[in-house]
Image 1 (cartoon, rainbow, N blue to C red):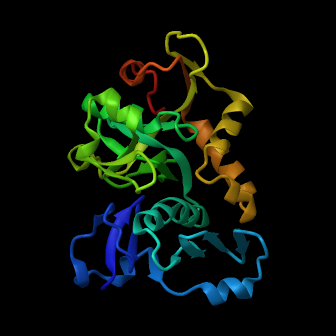
Image 2 (cartoon, rainbow, N blue to C red):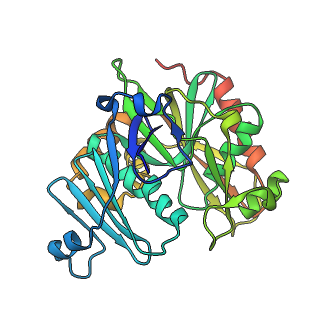
Length: 315
């Protein structure tokens, strides 16, 4: 098939591999190739993998490139921040291949280009982006969905791509119009699983199209909230506390998307300097909730209250 030009995370991607989750750049074949930032190609990488002689390693970085292998899925190669080569295994589930392209591959490309990818979601409230980070299952997408239901559009889900404008403000670029929610979140929102496709056949995580409440322009970042669920503790009110000093640096580093690949690529100093710059210009909070009750709407109220109080002025 002819390659298709997509846009996501502030970049244009020309891909030989279909990525239906992404927004297509209007203009098709008439688009200027010079506007492409990253090329995504499909090719047989087995010979190159063998030449690299990586032994038992599944991830290896050399000379500005990162190469990795996922069993039964394929080989993936990213180089110099401008090219991804994908080599799917015969019979591999295309949904799984896309998960790695849209997640790990794109995050590595961002790192190579100096774009900070945080593992989280973000919404827009009164012209500012509010990002939610946390470990898998912490409720990032669920909180974003709760805020979207209150009229605050989704800016990105899963990866928060950060750059800086000429005035030194951190800027969040839009991702793509889809959220991924687990079954308990669908239940909490009263959504029916039969109305949505699973992310892939082996898990009960659903792809939710959100075109009608997706914000497709970059927005300055006001604050980052770490979600820290404690389901084993007795039920208490939702707590929100500011994170300060070195703790916020550690927190932001730990929630960099695929943070384990940073030092592997020799980018540890870049990450520290970038996170230090980010920390100096935004507010950082930790939100804790206990028990197993569905608290997304209560948390959404706390976020909205904070944003609407004008605590953050952008000064």
